[in-house]
Image 1 (spheres, each protein chain N blue to C red):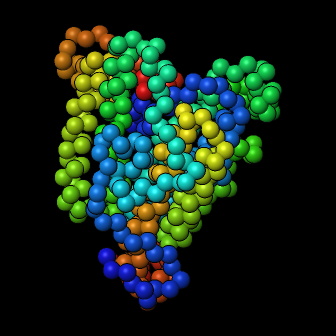
Image 2 (cartoon, rainbow over the protein chains, first blue to last red):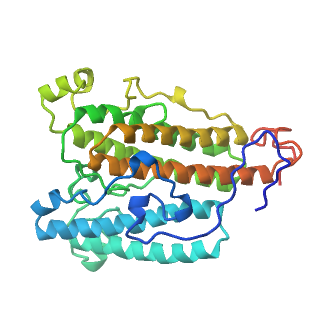
Image 3 (cartoon, chains in turn red, brown):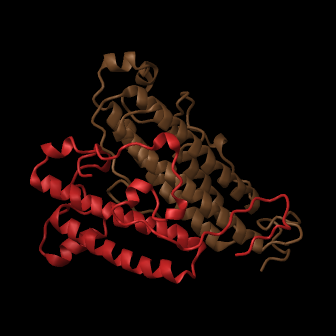
Length: 153
Length: 203
């Protein structure tokens, strides 16, 4: 996209080009998968290591496993969220599309596994439970802690 | 149609009760530059956008803002769920307590209630997208201000995440404006309103 300097009296933002990405384990800390869009505030530079360590000790191994899997779902889902917005304005970008294909398939599988092992995160996941066990009498949509309780995270 | 997913976009786990902090960050729930205002702005503007893909982007960002609203509400909830009457009194949370106890209600840090007066849906693509660019910057400034004032790392981490999203959304709205400009009269972007003057040149 070339800059048209002849246009006065209107805002211009250069189109982002596909560039370096953050690894999956970093994306929640940076708030974007795109290194070019990571523009932190000076007063926000501090340690993140101490976070969420205190509560972990109190948890059972099953709760810890639930939290671990939830965090993985949050990371992959967030990459999907960020890619979706990029593709909304760059629908023909082959790199973004290739990555999206990997991410949505992986996410679907993770959601299905989480539903089987813990509780469904989407109503769609109920199908995974009934497909595995047609005689299931479980209406498990309301199982699991509310997201705002900070229990499984 | 919307579908709920039973998780937060970013994890919130706050162990220390602090009504004072809740009173500050509640601004990003119901305040002038808050997430609810952002979501309603984009979800209102999308219907009349001349470019279908821009309407789609507004849907996707408006939806993400709902997830951000949920993050903010989860933070306010966790900061106040175990407060006692002394906490409420000494933290300056007493007025809120009288009106809402520990319920979650959309208001600004200044206690002004959530209102649609804080945003526009003007029916002009250039105008609305320019407002959206400004809205993301205003929200970023609020997060900057909160990050200067709040020390608890369990509160700071989600705020940093939300701040980063404002910058990404700004970039996307900028790109949406560029796409809209491409379809307008390049000699004069203000020659007609693509949302109203539908019989004018619009490819």
